[in-house]
Image (cartoon, rainbow, N blue to C red):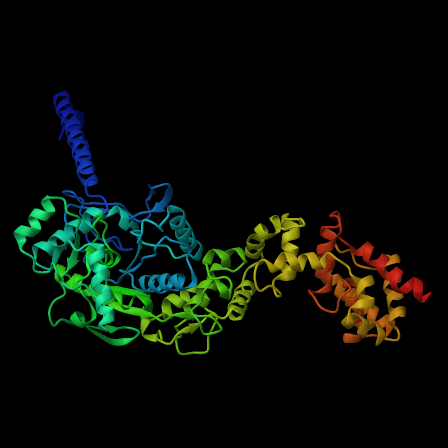
Length: 592
């Protein structure tokens, strides 16, 4: 509007500049006000923000709502984690078109097999639907046992597995105001009440019920107490909890996606249970119910040990006016002895499996099979296949048995599917930390990866396989190893064959192990040797293996020789020259 016939009107320029500056000032001021205002309600889920999706749903940033994309990294405590923060004054749930699932670990230790499987199943559901979200929630209300160190460990294990979350992590310890507000809402609506019973009174009542053969539960002493009396006691600072009032005659039923229909008679099963402790700290089931509602969780997939918690959580949700999510309770994971999997069965934490050389994709593959099967005999899956084929309807309610040998086999299959460059990168840390030391340069690692790939079950096997290949235990094994002795003693011409191998080396006919085409050259040379010694097949290659490696089994002979040549300057390594010397000492001189 400031242009006239290609020229700028100075007056208009002035007004335009002033207007632009004013607009920028107002925008900046509004942003600051929104940020300050929003900060007061951080961690609360917005009713004004449409649930975000991979397609980029509309985010309403007006008023006190603010949205940070899940790709944004913010400092959360002392650890850098992905956060998806909803900030609002309201306590209303998110409404979404796709599935919203969650994984809610308690940071009281490492991420174990059962928790990893639960996280995986939830993650697979979220990947399957384009509008779905995988929410990470840290249930750290157990102040005595929860630690940030444990939280970092669990989050690190999830990231190593590749189970990236879309929203969170949300910490329950940072949401105390929300729980107190919801407890007040329940009190105001008549669904909860203050309880002033002391620990001594509660214990005495419990023992009395046990003696009478009754199910111990709260006797309801303060359930219908006079409101004025309650108010005065609160005003006087008398310690108290807040209890949920169990509805008379209430029956709660769910159609569990794994276990089928489950029902509870609430009044017969429970007494009025605590929502807030006398310290003001909310109890586990109350936090879970509130968070599932406000985070818009549509399906709760968790271990069957939480099935009994479902009754309390649904009662709370209904009292608050929220529709309960659907539920799927996964069976236990047992050891080979059919007892619940524990440390006595060996490695059970994700960190341990990582340190022992398991691949994350192999762990994902195996964990998916602990309770799920698509109805075929297929056992090896790539992650995209799992995303496509996984369905809760195919999860069985029978306990799954953790089989370490099966896991090692699955891992070996994934190792064999790796490109050599990928495998080289994967085994490098284990060579760098090997004791005694092993080379970890690119050439040596590439040779080691090629040699060990078909023989490894876990990545930590690679240094052991390489170390064996660098040795030449011929002189010791010819007298002590039954398999080696059998080959030597069962071959009348073994000494003559050994002399022929030494003669080939001394004549310069033996291929150079450091050459790029050594493997092909070795096979060509061995075939020619067979003709001159009238040997073929096993009669040629087994004596040749024993002579050049000192063993009857192991990786391909030329691969071992090439690896030893690459590390010949390392103390204790027996390269080709040393091996020929040992052959001469053991057979040629004695034969002569």
